[in-house]
Image 1: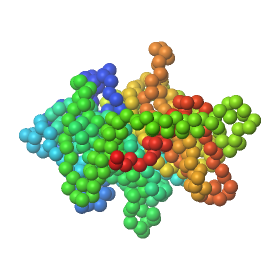
Image 2: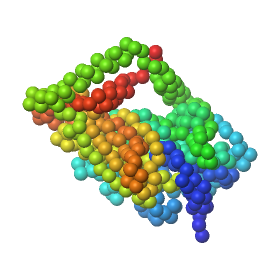
Image 3: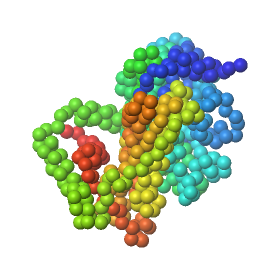
Image 4: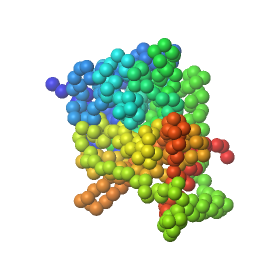
Length: 458
């Protein structure tokens, strides 16, 4: 006999088959009166994050029958099972299900615990060849957890309406300190800001330095999700968020300011002097590139053209990589992009790179099962002013390619920053300068450099 979650998924896929939905996720909120309240992983603000955490290794210790054929990893399995519990064990009053209500961040707060110190099987899933954490898998898990958080925030009192939740962007993922693979860690997050149909959530990776010290933030990320009506594909209103604690109010204010300033930046055209300034920067960037093209024997030996840093890989998107809406799981795309960027940084620097942050991820168009996906990576620019911590900025662009239609469209853009370990610099390692050879490359470099500058009020 099919579970209620299986019936809901089947109904979702039949109703939405063939409908384009932007973003890497596709979390379907069913139009049913039975899924009114969320039961799992809500961590009240006055409790420790791990008290009601989802166990990251739980799905490896018992079989998962939820939506077979979907994308599986230790954490995504646990999160899919948690969502099944939301469907199969609903609670709450039916009176409030048809209207939007304001919720506190604590209602969506969710955490997942990695018992690396005692769970050898789980630890092996996250260990890289250097006996460190596989950052790509951690980024993948952040995306899955962000989806669950958005699901909890929107799937309660508004469950009388059908909606699809999709990842709009990842503003920044910052590594604050190295993450160990032999010490327990937890990821905790909650919705911090809500617009009309969009929401921002902050996620933190918490880990102690050793078994005897207190947990502190090792990584921080901000995800933005948007809600789409399942029937029309248009934006649809969601529950507002009401911050309660001083910390929650501060996060809400910061997110509100970021949103306002971004809108202002998009709305304002550049002044004439700014255009002239960009033209000067463009010519300055292209100067060395022209030497490479016209007089290669005289080119700077400590520099390299952007086009000579390219790496790429391709894959056919398989059914096992889909999410609960039938689209390719956004976390899977982020992991593949990260691993290509890491490989690029490795071959560029000549030593194992050190991940610093995900600068930006844009979900432009959906990726479907059967799509031919190409990832193209390049080093955009380096910042070697600081000999202790040189920066390597890498772009990865994902293309959905259709050979039958002779078409190729960009589905995602990812931007990463890496460095190298201090001991490598002490041994005399030098990071080469990267120069553009075309106007398109130079403009992209300027755009990314400007994007990396902190947003400030006019």
